[in-house]
Image (cartoon, rainbow, N blue to C red; front, side, top):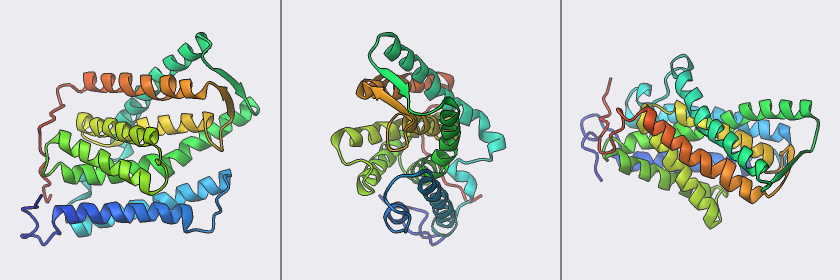
Length: 276
């Protein structure tokens, strides 16, 4: 895979740009989790520190890569201002939250799961609000900016949209493996399918705000029910994960996004990376 524009403006070839940004991204995540004196035991303060540090490191890295490696404007990455992007952000969140609510209703209504609160309702609301902010800074914004923003955008300059989506999904899955977030077969599959879905959101809407919204809703709610910081005890967590956290939101969320943006979707299109 060659980059015909590398010579005129002295940009590195496309594979090198992708490799550099992917490698630096992986190293930054490893540094945040393993290379800082924040400790390995979970607490909210450590979570907050890692979240802020991740955004502080990753966003400037992408800015620098776009300016120094791509020599192209920021606008190509698909992150317009929130004033413009809030509708797609809200749409992405709704594409996860509404099917997830149906899934929770089914799981509880049929007695497949039992859910109890570990703490007070007021504390659960406070934790939920905090998680929205932390997930946005730690995962949704930086991961979408790198993988669906920078990497998918660059791949789409040389490959049809469907191949660019598949390429960034493979990179996202490898990233999950290298940073220790996806080391089992089921986790690797989840990472790949999740990344395909988010890449499709970018193709459907033309920016990454819908993906940020979907990512944010999924991770914030999932962390309330599973993990070290969970505020709920769940009997039947596996079924809840398959039906309400993954299966229904992933499938119905994509169906809704595809139906709403069917006129825009073109899986064979290339996206020329203009210098203005």
